[in-house]
Image (cartoon, rainbow, N blue to C red):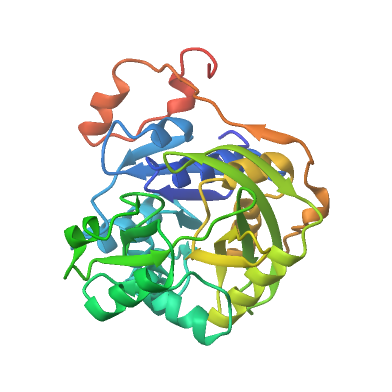
Length: 352
């Protein structure tokens, strides 16, 4: 058995999305060596091919998912399970005792009730407002009086987005009151004040221990294209955004990773417009810059000391571009047939 195979085994679920791929890439940057396993629902998921071992999983909403995960973790000797996709995280939190009892694995996830609050953007707006924290004015699209009051109070444009959305998917900017009728009466969407910003969006990554102690926080300025970060700069000496994000996490009682997103308004006010109790899609970027919250979280979940400081981060600028990897042609078919594959041994050349 190689040193890598004898290392702590970390299973990354939902490896096909950007966060799952980022977690794997971040763990590759860690000082400690991990044996990384990846699972996803389709054989074409790119994160599967970044792992030491990969296999298919049932969807998180499948009734067989908890039993499958417990059996897989026990058989594969997985120490920690991580994920960055909301449906998977909720399944882990909801069935956590069953899964952990059946396998001895540690699930890296916060409590189910907090995950539900963070995912519900309307309820989260209310929690932040009650906590005295600046957040864009927000109403449900099925609240006709509230919609009328919001568009009368703020100049266009206005933001329409899913109440339970993930990332920037299906977010619409509109300046037409008539267009808002498309969402009239639909409680699955919210209407939000648009905050005109004087600089790029800020995102703050925080990590909290099981005892609710802040292990580390770092702010990042970034530019997005179609919801994906393409340019970023870590703000090594930022205090305002990091302190505000920490206050939000402590208000919620967060355990584990959390990313908080702000828009700095023209008057300098930081408006919190999103809170996610998971790693962000920039987790690998932070790890490359010296702030590896994914690796620190693994150590924390395993009960070991972990050092995490923003003082170590680089002050360069990150520019993201597309990479491609080639593998043996039969791997996808093997996954579909239910096999466990070893992608790194089958890679045909370096990433390009």
